[in-house]
Length: 266
Length: 215
Image 1 (tube, chains in turn brown, green):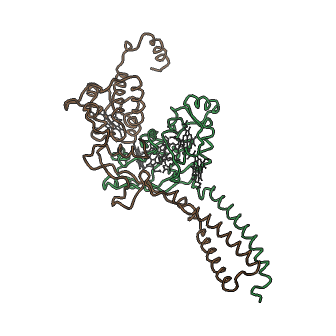
Image 2 (tube, helix red, strand yellow; image 1 turned 45 degrees about the horizontal axis):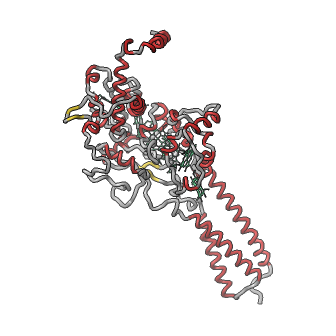
Image 3 (spheres, chains in turn orange, red; image 1 turned 30 degrees about the vertical axis):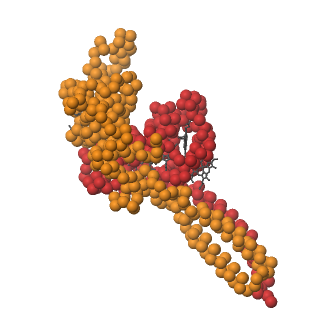
């Protein structure tokens, strides 16, 4: 069942690394709605008080009163009712219900967080993670070169999409390690096309994403295990792409390749 | 016995009509204020504890929205990045910048950064990002040119009439799913044609029932 914001909080906790979740504060003129309009509440109160005094005086002086006074009184009652309606607009019960939206701060707990950290060692439903290969990239404690599920074309497409979101800022689109953030001074990661990484088992890529590596942080909190495998598969594609020969291209596609080559200044 | 002078008759009459007039005027003024940026805060850049710039990160660096707003595709809540996300880069670059001190302090002391909410609906409205994303409504359709904002502001009122304007006829706004996250997407000239086709292809309904949003 999907309920507001539960999902992301669990996911962000999963990474293991200390990751303070942010707070989202509602503030400013819009909340509460009418009270912030200058003098509005004061006006309401003043008018209310005026009516009260007026009717007190009137009831002391004379029961019933002149027709004019009666009309004035009736008008007062109507105005009061109108004000009550407007005041109902001042009430914020439904605008700000006594519930916490994701990341809403609270004063109840010392650290101010409304969503509580999971007690260490808790295993949530569906999070038992007994499948060693799927969740650690290892078999019997050794990094494995096997994928936990067969990789289809859809998986590769998904892998490419996720890679482009999460990895390209540093590793760039081809995996050579010259992403935009590296150009702005981030220590360059190694190219995926060096021998060591070409020989590395796929489990290694899964492991780097899950636990981080040197100055690279873990992406476990942001990428689901299945997607990490798809990214690993896509990295294999990238590696292949930089070491492909003409023989790897199906004969039917080769003319197209020659056309592409002809168009490119060598 | 005469308590009130005759002139009070006129005064009371005038004040009755006057009150009605003033009430109407007040209503009009309130309504005008409610629609004006003074109250809606549309296009008003908001102060934040860290001067985070989408112009810099999403625009110039071209970082995908989902790098930071990870849950936008699969949950109702788009997600505000935890400190760790900032630190994936800022543990190595701009590590001395004073304006990033709140981020470092948050990471050091395990204290939340308190961002100021820019877009907020009243609690009685149900909103879900994931459905809009998966039906081809782009971020910029609702949030404006985020990648050009040095400090984030609200681009639309988020009032009910604004939601309904699209819900009545989504064809005017939907784009191909592959373009949803593109902050520089420009609506093509043949939007109505394209929209009509996408509405069919993505099986988009026109949801105007009250219980869609008030549940």
